[in-house]
Length: 342
Image 1 (cartoon, rainbow, N blue to C red):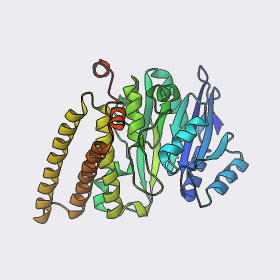
Image 2: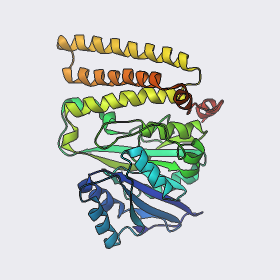
Image 3: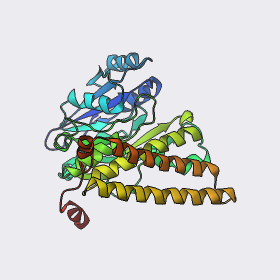
Image 4: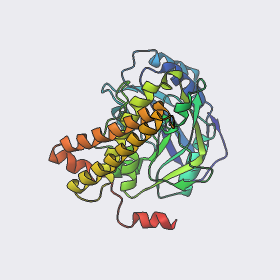
């Protein structure tokens, strides 16, 4: 890492990379991190969380440690399978003012830390921020995949910084005090990507709970990264599975934001998903007449099936679990009005 011009007031940032059997791409991720420019008054440490890897992950990390190109690089293990547990392990093993959750298939721009720290210093109410997530396809993707870039964590809100209502997990930078105030460190509620299973919700939970604790979420396009998409993730089967998980995640996120009673949430959610189901049926009819593709219908139908599964999941919870989940991330009174004035 190379030092750059000094900035006022010392800050620290911990880059946490949770990984499971992805050593080849992890090697490229660490090689990009070795090129980061870090201001001299900023402490930047990197922690890899090995979530039961059976490949050469540890050997890859140890080789980067021996190279010395990343001065503060370490690796720890998390035996409980799942991204949420791995992230929490990383948070508990670090102490930085800011925490950057970087996926093991992301290549950070050289000025990524510089831009993140500068933005944090200029936006004191910011609890979490994310930047441009640019999809880096291993091979040209099929046409249907290009219609669902959100499935690959693309994040693109233009060239101007703005407040947002949620953030993707790839490259999410969170203020440690905001994460603590949200209650997530003490008790995460949702699992996220257990092994190779396309389970989602953890990213949404972190962002929404930070916002619900009264902090701002920001998109800063100056922080950019490339998200590597391997050919195996471009199949129709993959997108169907991912969108099912995203449908579940969407419902759970809506439940966390809900400000009223559970029965009102259940009635509203069921109505919303019923209308979404109707729209998919209409799309299927049009596709049968050649006015759409069967791939698009299958992917959208999977998202709706996930939404129904999410409604069912919340309904099957016991009363205590529901009370913990529903409304946990609701926005404080007056917060949305304050956002609108900015």
